[in-house]
Length: 272
Image 1: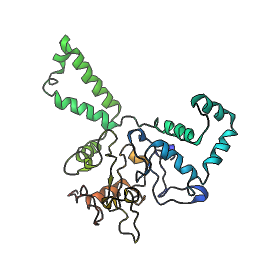
Image 2: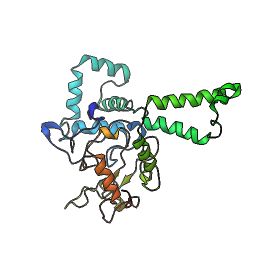
Image 3: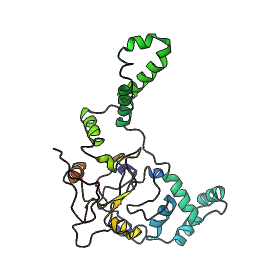
C-alpha cells in the first residue's frame, strides 16, 4: 500500500515476505473510513479486523501477533504512547486500533470534476438568475448570490478539467454507460459485491464473496472499488488482470465475461 501508488501497489498481485505473491491485487487504503466491511471479499467486518490480519498472514508479513507485541515492547516510544492512549497499553487489539485510526485519516481531496460539477449544477439551477451578471453585482440583495457564483467559478478555474474529461464524466453518469449502477455516491462505489466475469474462465476461478457468505449469488463477486484517484492505482480488477483504464472500459463495453453468476448490472454497452 505505497503512498506513491495511491496507497495500493503497481504489481498485479500483492507481494509479501520473500517476494511471495498473493492471489489478489492490493486494494487501496484510502477512503476506507467510508466503508464497513474490508478486503475485496468483505471478510473483515471493520478496519481494525482488516489491520490485524496481514501481520500473521504467512504470505504478507509472516509474523505472529505475539512476536509483533514483543517487538514493539522493545521500543520505549511506542510503549509510552500506547500507555498514554489506551487504558490497557500495548496489546494486539490496540495495535489494530492504532493502524485503523491512521487509515481513517487517508481521505482523498476534491478532484477537478467535483469543482466542475458544483459549478455546473449551480448554473443549471440558476440559469435565469445569472443571465445578467452585471445587474446581479449591482443589486445589494443579490450580492451574496453573485459572490457564491464567482467563488464556484474561481474554484473550478483553479482546478481545471479538460473538455474530454467533462464528456467522459457526463457519459459516466448517464444511463448509456450505466457506470453509476455500482460506482455512485461520494466515493463512487456502492460497497457491494458483483460478478463482472473477471477470471471466471479459469479452471478454478476465485469465488470471492461466496467464500465468506456461502450464498450462491455471490460466486465470483467482488467489492466495487472506488474510482477516486483511480489513475494512480493500476493494474485493475481484483486479480490485477487489466493494466489500463482503457482495458477496464473495454471490459464493460463488451459486457464482461458471460457466466451463470454474472451481475445483472453488467450489460453490453453500445459505446464506440
